[in-house]
Image (cartoon, rainbow, N blue to C red; front, side, top):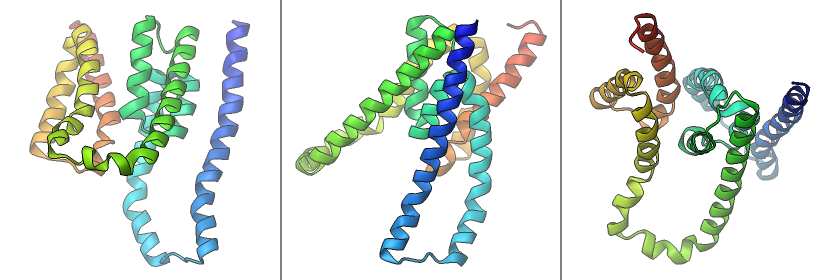
Length: 220
């Protein structure tokens, strides 16, 4: 128990400091560019833009913290919230690793497995991006071909479809309600690309509520 507490303490210690450092670094980039190029933003437009977008992002940020941390663990959460692309990449990698290792995210083993999976995912993503930047111009004539566009459009559905089959087959009763909800939302009220991300935490909260009700009624 002491060893686990020591590990968690170290995760919180370094995670908090690195997250603060990265936040300052992210904020410094536009400020430095503005100073170098003497480009002062249109403050009126900036304020209007923030009023329109900040409430949604604050809400999403709060809900994501509540829903993602139990699935990713402490170390994985620190890494994920810094490197980004959680729902599309980090979360599927962590869940797949936990599934293969047959451990839970809230265990000491699960904490380590999730953190390693997300760290490797971040490294691989960075390497692929570097390779892509180097070869994007030579490969553009090939990648822009019409015959490849359908394949690129199916990358994310294929990723989540593979994960979905595994988890839905194990808890098919729980999966029915959120699937119906998401289908209804996307069919009758198509969302823009900027609004899709909020549906992941919304779906998680909805699933938890429905699962609790089903459990109370003895359906699980």
